[in-house]
Length: 258
Image 1 (tube, rainbow, N blue to C red):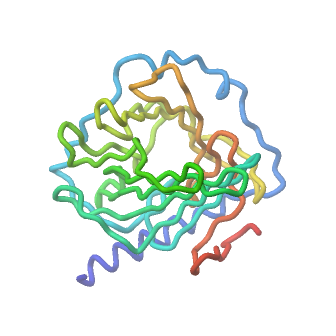
Image 2: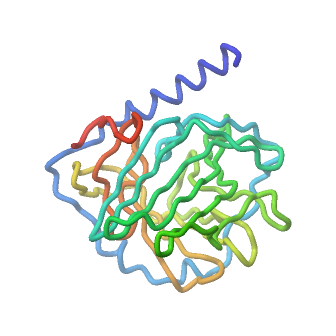
């Protein structure tokens, strides 16, 4: 790795941490009811971006933008009633087509039992800091037995290509495909707000980004996710951020929180 690239990566590591100043523990959540009650028309209408000119981009396997970390060993833990999600940026890289990607592992538990592990493939545009999603390998554990999940896909599969997971410069109203594998994986998101105040067990976060997510395969089903500046995902439906920081083996060393 040349020195200039090292410099860029170090800059990308530290800029998001400067944003931790937006944390405001003790401030009451001010989630506007409109965010929760928006009709699904936006998710059903046309205008979803699916072309991202990937051949014109220079990709990195490490870095971050304001709402998404792609730094090895960074970890988020979200918990809800009977459920837990742990997201860890691994040291591993995987080549998908011509692009080298970073592996982000997600582990999901229900009632204390591991139910799914997915290895997700991401890369970041060095100029725009857009984070792109190049596929996933999913393993489920029905009755304790492992089997490959039907949700697995790769951007180098026939008819598939990478989707945009998190824009480097998000704007309210942006609508884009996060996955593009027709017939298998067509998740998409639109940005509802960039000014949400959101409360979690580890504090209240200001200036959060909220997405409304649906699928081109099931456009009537909506999910909401919330991302805090300098941290990333803090809410996924009923799951709320309970810990975040850098992993050391099986432990998470908190930046803040418990």
